[in-house]
Image (cartoon, rainbow, N blue to C red):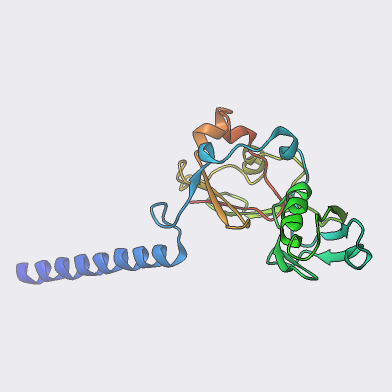
Length: 213
């Protein structure tokens, strides 16, 4: 009888080890573990110039009008930002634009066009913008898609989602941003709740995905 109980315990232990191994492999596959996959702490993000921080960030679904001064064939070009965050323009082809400010995109296009146009001067207009939304996933009471206004911060969004669940890890809050290259920005609940900079001054952008692990 004793031997049977010992055998049952060994079998249970093996199943638990297998279960944990399965969870770990799943974690690796999904990139959900904080120790897996690259991220940058919000404190280590390069600081944007104050003027640029207030500028509109281009998002998927936006309609842009591109003009090149003195070149009618390259002016009044209308391009819709695809879901992958790119547009297609003559000469330069596909260009990643999601998350860029119009001024940054203008500078990028001027650099790209130098091989075809002498001293290009580009202007960018956002003709139509899609309603700005972000997605909230993970350990919150009300995950989902939320509309945001310019300057909406992470603490406010978490409050709208009901705060953190009792299972949430308060040191593993991430914002996934589809820039070029993509960014995975890490926050702690303490820095947000205390209003510490730069966490409390971080502005969400359309298309951001907030993940609470």
